[in-house]
Length: 115
Image 1 (cartoon, one colour):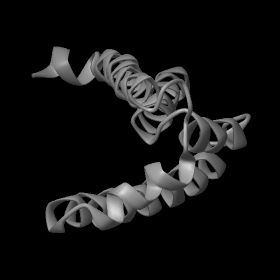
Image 2: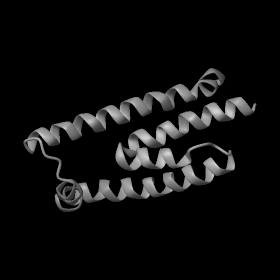
Image 3: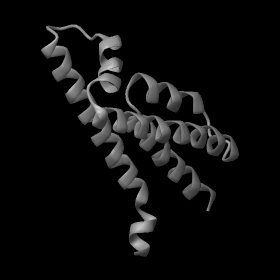
């Protein structure tokens, strides 16, 4: 168990790669389905209008995203991390599944340096 705790930053890095990759993959499938166009309004509306399952996932995502965003900001300032804004931009423009695990990865590296 101690080994897992010492190397948890690799888990966050794996989630960063996986989250970014899977999100990119499905976004590309959507663009292909829409003949090369990304319609951001349709993308957002589909998560609210399709069905109750989609709405459930949407509220789940947004609640977690809001909590994670506050965590990035507060923890980043607490640890005096550089470029906190970058994680927020990556979260919005790439994917939350990419930006948040990347923040956790860099945070773990920062905590290791402080030990």
